[in-house]
Amino acid sequence: MTEEDKVWLITGCSTGMGREFASEALRAGYRVVATARDPKTLEEIVAGHSARARALALDVTNAAQVEDVVAATIAEFGRIDVLVNNAAYGYLAAIEEGDEADVRAMFETNFWGLLRMTRAVLPQMRAQRSGHIVQNSSQAGLMSKPGTGYYSTTKWAVEALTEALVEEVAPFGIRVTALEPGPFRTDWAGRSMKRAKSQIAAYDAVHARAQMIADMDGKQPGDPRGAAQALVELVRAKNPPRQLLMGKLVLDTYRSKLDAIRASLDEWEDLTIRADYASD
Image (cartoon, rainbow, N blue to C red; front, side, top):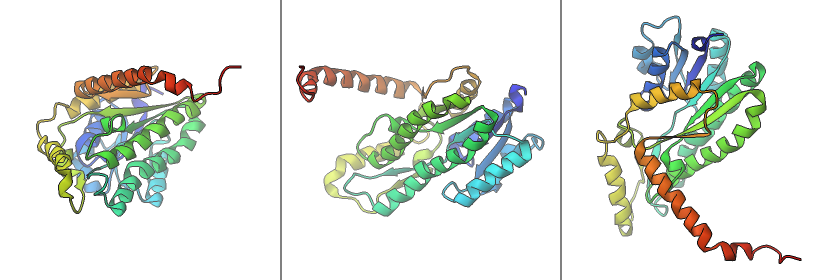
C-alpha cells in the first residue's frame, strides 16, 4: 500500500479546520471520507474527486450514524488509516452561570462523540495493525481560563483519554495524537461558540474576556491551511508526538504555564514530601 492509498475519515468538515483538513488530505492524494450533519455542505470539497472522496452525513452524538459511517467507509475503501476527530463547539460562561443541560450537550459532542468515533474505528485498526487517531483538541485542553472553563473541561477530558490511549494501542501499531490549536481564523468564535443563557453582573470581567474572544474573529493569527498542511506532515511522520501545539501563541503561553508549574512545585516541595510516611 502506498502512502496515498491510505483512507482518512474526518468529522465536522462543513466549515473551519475540518473543511481544510479534508481539502488538504485530498490535495495530498489521500482517499477521504468527509462528514458533516448536512453532507450538502461538503459537495465543493469532494467535487472532482469521485474516485477518492465521499461525503457522508454524520452527527457524532448519534451512535447509529457513527457505526453506519465507519461501516460505509470500510465497505467503500476497505480500511480506515486516519481518523480525525474534529467535530466540536465551544461555550462561554462563568462557572456559576453555566446551564447544566447546555454543558451536558457540549460534552455529548466534544467528548462522548469523539470517544464514540474512536471506539468505532479501533477494531478495524487493530485488525490491520496500523492506524493514526488524531484528536483535534485545543489550547483550552492545556490551559483553562475564565469564561471557557466548561469548554476546557471537555477538552481536558480529551487530553486524559488520549494520554491513556497512546499507550494502550501502541502494541497494535496504532498512533494517537492530540492537536492543540490556538486561535485560528475560522470564524469559530462566532459560528461554533455558544453562550450562557443568562449572565451575572458580578462577572463583568469574565464577560469582557468572552467578548474579546468573539471580537477576534477574522484577526486570529492561526492559518487553517497551514494547520492542515502540518496535519498531513504529522500523519506522515514515523514517530508522531502525543501532542502537537499549533501556533506560536499557544506555544509561548503554554511554556509560561509550565514555568509557573515548575516554580510552584519547587516552592511547595517540602510540604508535598511531608505527605509521605517518615523514612524508617
